[in-house]
Length: 253
Length: 305
Image (cartoon, rainbow over all chains, first blue to last red):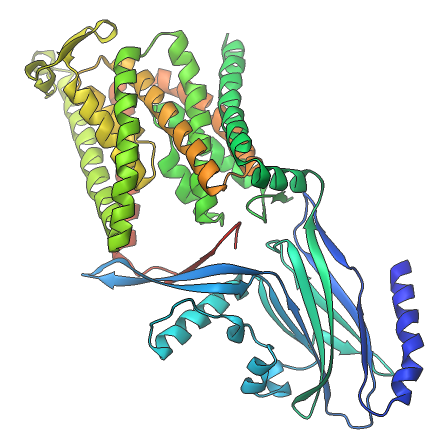
């Protein structure tokens, strides 16, 4: 709560400067600059506050794009061969965002046309670059759409119209949900002011999602000492089996 | 309550995972098979990414078979000499199987070969186990015709060796070939091979039934341990938090399974195993013919994404 008060006072202190300026000006800040993946992590809420000068005209929108670290990903499509579901076709994406959240004041399609959306990276679809692709255009589009749909189902690609809410004096607040699958890494948050279907100002911020404590230790150990980790994993399995056999023999008499 | 998995990078319900471990361990203890063929699909069904599910499957199979192996070892209910021969051939089979698998996937036939051979093989084993056991049970009332069709191929082939524990003097070729073939199949199909080994030991090697479960568990223990270690060092997909929860369930399940296994006679056990295998075959066969719920599946490098 202390943080919240600090944040608000910071934004309020900016207000006169914003109002004094001629052109649209934007200020925004995240409540937290890190999200910790603890052992009971099952999602988090990302809160952002900001202020924008509303120069009289009403057609002003805010779009916030939260983007997680990129990772190589692929999508496989099953197909029928000789009446059996055994065929498969695969499309690789060199760098697909692991998380892609779009929060806005209105549905994004009402705010900007599709080509503006992809030009300014406001939709997940435009962020997928297939690797060495030879498929026909339509089929590739189907693959991309299916990929986005699958990630949307996992709540990793999120579209949240109305997640950004204006309060008063051009102040706004946005809440974006991060799912339990939230991968660790550096996240960027781009806030854009859109007037008459065109972006007029933007800010870029970042926050980090990190594992902590025991989880962090295991992850790093597994990555840095692959061999020892493998031996340890095997000994753990065999030891547990051995111990349980001994224990149960005692119980059974 | 949910718990966060550091390698899989996702949250799961520990109770669900414990339950899956119990089921798999129970099957493993009851029939003397690894249970990997059940665990991996169950994990994938509950949302664990496939690469993690495969490694966890092998690691849990290793734990469950260790738990079932100790009591068998203490009772000396296994033929170590025969087991070692089969394991050696099995490891060589795994090596060749991996090469074949890579070759098949290069040609784009991997999925086809795996799925179809699964259905054919399991269907054949399940039905023959069931029909043989039913026949024996029916004939048990009439002891004069109590006779199971067994192969005498081991007595005919060369390279004979004495196996005092099994009271057999047979050629080492059948066990070597069985071990090798099961190694190939387990590399291609990603399973421990116990469900193939039990019938093979009974019908082809003519091993005394009291030694079959112990010897088969021995083979599964070694193959599953090798696979778990190799996979975790080469792909790094072993999540110790996930496998610890699964293992706790599995080792308890294995003991429960062993307990009930002792209450049932050999024929009943074989009928039950036959039914389990036939049920699995049905599920796999249906998957081939029915339109899948999700035509698209996604995966990604590293963790759950």
